[in-house]
Image 1 (cartoon, rainbow, N blue to C red):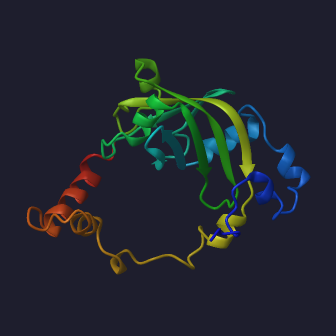
Image 2 (image 1 turned 120 degrees about the vertical axis):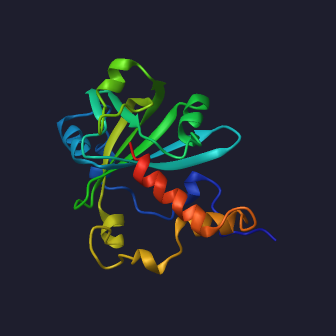
Length: 209
């Protein structure tokens, strides 16, 4: 039996939605203008999407003090790679497929900024020096050659009430990261929850920069 509710082509998809507004159709530009530059300078958080052929798509957060992403010129962004889990999922993907999508957020603002382009990796000393934080150099820089820039309306964040207190969760009401990893990976026989929690806290304190 065929599932007639499954949408398999773009024409069928678009038939179910109204036409995009004129503002939605004309808002895309091909460079970092003054408005985009200001938003990026205020943003302490971005989400970066990347893809590796044969493995699929990955999304990862990047965060630091506002301005940590530098606008080198109207078509180039520089993102420092701060210490993480060393899986190198994003950067490994970018070596295989340079296409990248960025979503910038600013606390207190419901609108977000989307940037699409192609990425390259660099450990040029001058670029690294420009992104020193807490006296430490990043190990790598992600350079993004900008192709598309546009603001995303605030409906999603308004519905999520992301910057309000309504849906804020007490951290004590959920399991710790150490417990989650131990239980998901079934490590109970080789690693205790207490040891895993201690390792996570140690990493937060010693390897933030």
